[in-house]
Amino acid sequence: MSKRGAIELTLGTIVIVVLSVTMLILGIVFVKSIMCSGIVISEDLSTGVKNQVRDLFSADQYGVKCVGEGGNEIKYATGGRRQVVCIIKTEDQTEYSLTVKDLETIKGGNSRLAEGWVIDEDWKGTVSPGGEGTEAVVAVLDIPRDAPTTTLKITINGKNMDTGSETTHISYIDVTPTGFLRTTLC
Image 1 (cartoon, rainbow, N blue to C red):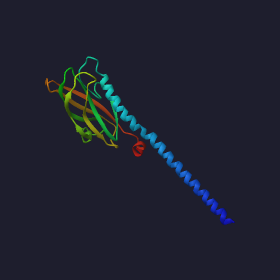
Image 2: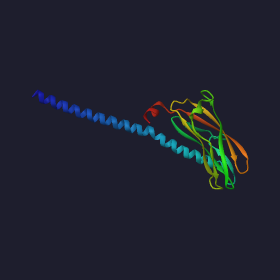
Image 3: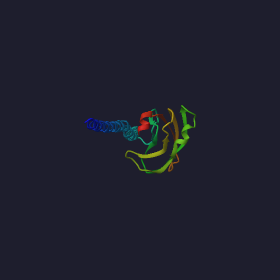
Image 4: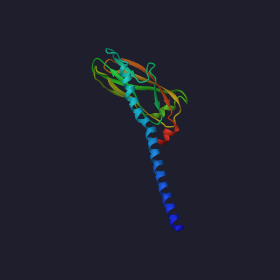
């Protein structure tokens, strides 16, 4: 009779352990989905930043505006690829080129820390007249997960190939680290 009681206790214990482990796994998945939802939000922020740059133009204003330019600071999180975008708006169709002249770290770390983060730079293309302007990805930064808090200063040279006129644009981008927990989970 005592053996039968021991078997029942063992089966009850096994069921409780299995249910506990299942609940633990479901809890971890739930927490991870909440923590990682920030990734989707950061992608939405990129779209929001582009829309803010478009909003800098008045209805009859033409030229080049870049993210992080003119006191409109932006923040990029560490651990991923981030685009540096300019919007070009012209009256007539024209050929345009945007070139990254300098990229330096002005706060935190040495001044050339971010040069290794650039995986693509410069843009050249045809700009269509009017509308919301043409979006130009001037640089793509691959910011490491362990990058320190810093501010990047990106000097961009814009050249209208048809008229030969050149402009200089300076963008300031704050890089802020993501938390350890989010970096580990996502």
